[in-house]
Image (cartoon, rainbow, N blue to C red; front, side, top):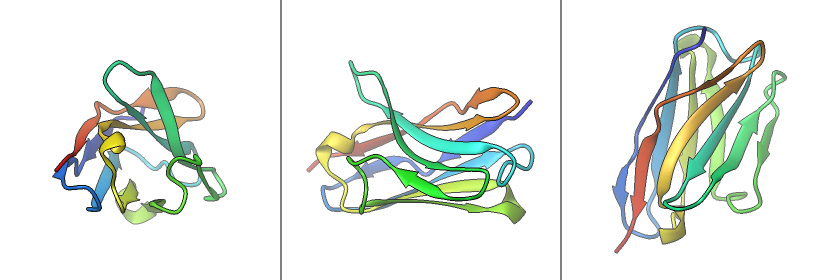
Length: 114
């Protein structure tokens, strides 16, 4: 069982930055695939970025060049650095871990507006 807690969401103006954190209850980096998703109102859940068990990052075209996924193994934490935020980035952001099982965090709200 893996418990995930996201934090770092908030309200920012267009062009601003946020760093989201996903703290896990156990070691996840190098063992599980880790990903960030988001869900905007009235839309389905969208994959944004992932780290494989070999710690290779992958990004959706919609965020490539603006978002960066990284991890701190000592803290069992995965981050999503988000820059040049746009109003269309407004959504609830979720951390997702897959391996022997599949786990989701509770989500953190990101709002981008002027």
